[in-house]
Length: 54
Image 1: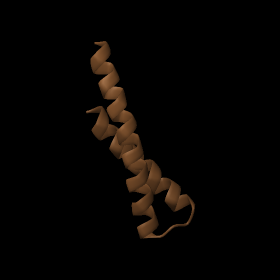
Image 2: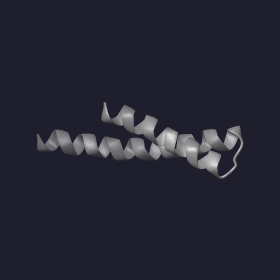
Image 3: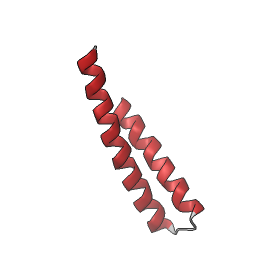
Image 4: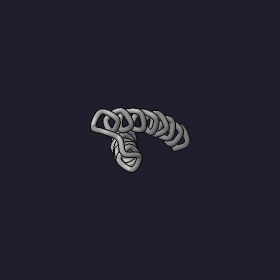
């Protein structure tokens, strides 16, 4: 659940950052994918950490 939420949040952040920079649709999609993947990896580590602790 954390991983999915992290991807959606990262994609939204990336889309907004590209829009503020004046990027086109391809730029927005690339930023959304990159930020989504980065936060997905962070969410995966958080999930593993929480499962190991509890």
